[in-house]
Structures are given as structure tokens and as C-alpha cells.
Amino acid sequence: MKHINTYIAFVFLSLFCGSCGSGGCNVVPNVTFQVTLSQGSSPDLYRPGGWAYADGGVCGLIVYNDGGNVIAYDRCSTVNIQQRNRVEVNGFEVVDSASGAKWLLLDGSPAHIAECHLKPYRVSKSGDFYKIYN
Image 1 (cartoon, one colour):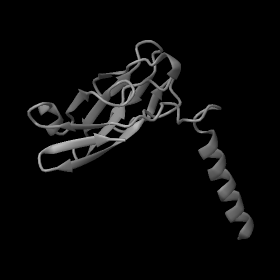
Image 2 (image 1 turned 135 degrees about the horizontal axis):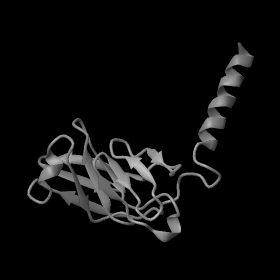
Image 3 (image 1 turned 60 degrees about the vertical axis):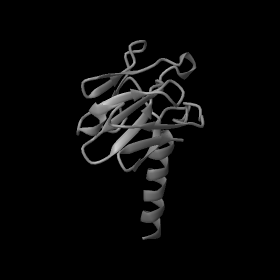
């Protein structure tokens, strides 16, 4: 039993450490910010499947309503991070037109070329307002 637990831990650690290439996935710099969005400023965000761009983060924000939660990502592409390419929403994908990389809007996971998720930010709701911050 001890060998099985050790094997499982080794496999998990190998997958976790190697999941985003040799550079790791914490590639978008940390910045301190706080943005508040309202229904008046971002009406599409208040319906399931709706989204909005906002200021904040490194390259701006994508804020998305998945029908149960509101989630936010940095618009900075995780491919060629030094170029600070700004990604854009295209249907249910997020696209970096410079590299051709794509992510899923639903959870920020890589869909094409990219190895790392889009950088997420915290979102809290207070009354009719959403606060996005790092």
C-alpha cells in the first residue's frame, strides 16, 4: 500500500510540475488593482454567457458570467509574455491574434498552442456590483 501511495504522489507531482512547459505558468506579472463594475457600465455581464472588457491587470480584463459565477482573466496572452499581446473574445474562445493561441472562455484553459491558462483574478459581488481585484 505504501508503494502505491508513493507512486500516485509521484505521478501527480510529475503531471503538476510538467503541465505548462519548462517556464511554468506564473508568467503574467502580479499587479495590484481593484475595479468595480455595475449593470449600468457592463449590462452584458449580468446575463449568463455575457462578458465585458474592463481596465485593470496587466493588459486589461475579460470578465465573464458563466451562469453561476462571474470570473475574470487578464487579457495578457500567456504565449510570448514579453510581447504583452492583448487577447480578445471570439465566441466562446479567447484568441491571441499575434500567436494564434486560443483559450476557452469558460475556464481560461488552453485550447490551441498555449500551454498555460489565462491569469485569473478574484471577483466578489456586493449588491449589484462586481469587484475584481488581485
